[in-house]
Image (cartoon, rainbow, N blue to C red; front, side, top):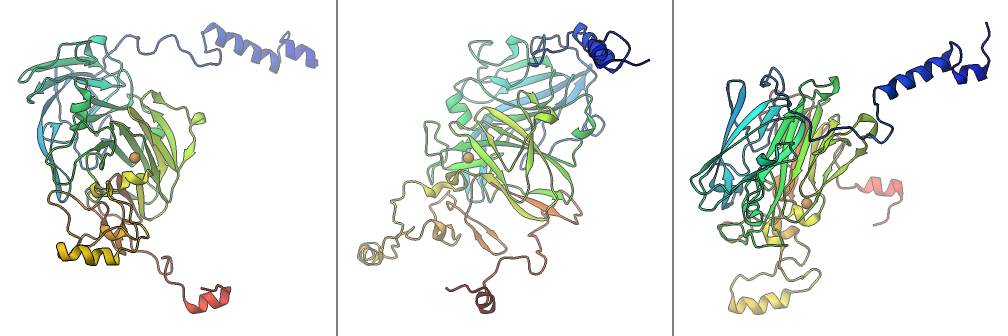
Length: 445
Ligand SMILES: [Cu+2]
């Protein structure tokens, strides 16, 4: 029997076209999306609890550089957590401490980690002198568990303990933070990350390294002992997990590892374009959910807006020490980069001589930019850190703040130890051009 093209298209007889049409009708009968992806329920769906997912068995725990996971216990199938808000004497980087507000003795608070379908009960004790509340940013919760003081619950007064309880219906990267006097309490550090693993992960969810990083910003005048919550701009301490470089722990991975980096941003006023050297990554999720593979796009810089999370994934296939940092240049500088008069290219020699008559040892800083001030030997006011500067194997790194290092190694004995600086293969480091090179290539200098 032969089937005409017309017959096949109409599906009037058995044929390829007919089967396709039947399949289409079957899909339509099941209520498949008409093309825009709307689903009948999102956050309003029923919550169905599943047995508590356990680390090592149901998920591989994330790494929170410079941080920890919040411990839990299981009581009658419910995961029970306890957060307490309190004042914390926090070190941002060697040389800079401030009295901040955090949870469980840490700034920021520990990472809450769980599995989709877990029933969680989170106690919050207020050990501060001010009332507070905790909001679960991005989570689908019953309205009364949303943690917005005044709107969905009374404030948690000093010395009180509140109980939050809900079932986790999503997976991804989320955040928690104070939702009372946010300007003050978040500026002082009351925030943390929530990581929820999928209950039934797809094959490509598995990674070797899974890092969780919370971005924030602070105004701490040099020498001050507390962050200033009134600041609206001029943030001078920019942090990853509340640490400014060189206080940030490196991200240690093995060559070929699949790596996930989860970024959350609870800064007061700034978005952070996080740039990674030597690699590209794919944007795979936001705090609104997973991005289908077909919609993921490759980037070398991911913008993490205030109040958002972004998950990226990469294959770390290039050995080396690669910066991972905010690309806003003032966000990779520490305290002292602000409020200096602009003296770049000024000849200040005579000025220095004059001032030295009054102030012995006076020296104008910044004629050649700020790099000279990065020298750790230059004195800085008590309880402050130089505006830039860690020290690398080739000298001063003129960056601070929201900066860390992805250390990709071919051989690694442990993920937990800093493997030191990358040993570059011979002939692969930029170096002083030799006369022979210049003459061969006709470069006149
Ligand atoms: Cu930034």
